[in-house]
Amino acid sequence: MSISGAGDDETGTTFSNGIVECSVDYRGKPSVRSSSGGWRSSGFIISAEISEKFAYFGVASNLITYFTGPLEESTAAAASNVNIWLGTAAFLPLIWGSIADSFLGRFRTILLTSSLYILGLGLLTFSATIPSLCRDQEPNASCVSQLEVTIFFCALYIIAIGEGGFKVCLRAFGADQFDEQDPEESISKSVYFNWSYFAIATGTLSTRLISNYVQENLSWALGFGIPCLSMILALFLFLLGTNTYRFSTGGEGRKHNNPFVRIGRVFVAAAKRAIQLKLRKQKLC
Image 1 (cartoon, one colour):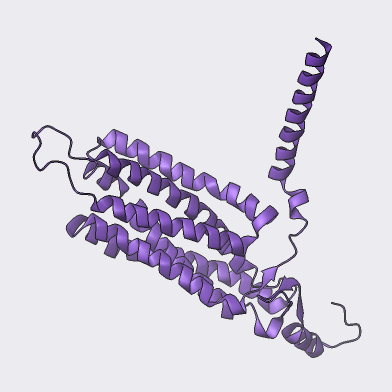
Image 2 (cartoon, one colour; image 1 turned 135 degrees about the vertical axis):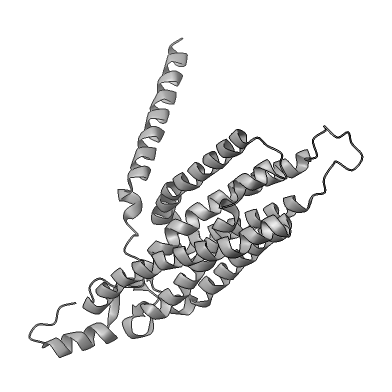
């Protein structure tokens, strides 16, 4: 947006009331700076992030205790399972970030992964309600149902899939609510990341005060159920701000520039080439 000969006040007014470039509202119309984005939108996103972190650490912070307790695993096996799960959860944002940038967009990815997140937490809660097998068995027999273990591990990795996409897209979507071309919003964008880290710390601290106590002193089913409700609240808070969000359109061409997509095309081209060579050899024979 170029306004030659305009003073500082006029430029500031234009930024305040103008159209945000490469951005649309929830109806698909160009975003108006004065009625979309900024702190009016990021407040919903930060609140959702607090609830999501409460849900995530409500599961992650006490996993070893659950493995060595109700699932009757050794400490070494429990630590191994937790580390594999944490590693998977840490790696998946790379994949989800590529999918969001190239195909789905951040908003749709958040909706999809939050649904998976809630599904995983619901299954985790259900697995904790499956009764023990030790009522009439020998003292040395395992009390753990194979059904419980199967549902538990399925739920755990569904949570990892959901958390990986939700985490990477929510923070980026929050940053999309601030226009770097606007001097005031550019400064606010930096402040937003400070509040985002504050949300992480708040969610982590609160879950250690509440969920860990419930899990160890009351019930594991209730201890997993509370994070599930917290994630439902996170999705509700996120959707509550839909009318105020800015949806970036500047990434429409990113599917052509995304490195993962380019790498994938190389493998697809190599596979096609290999198949063609194999068919030619068969014809010659």
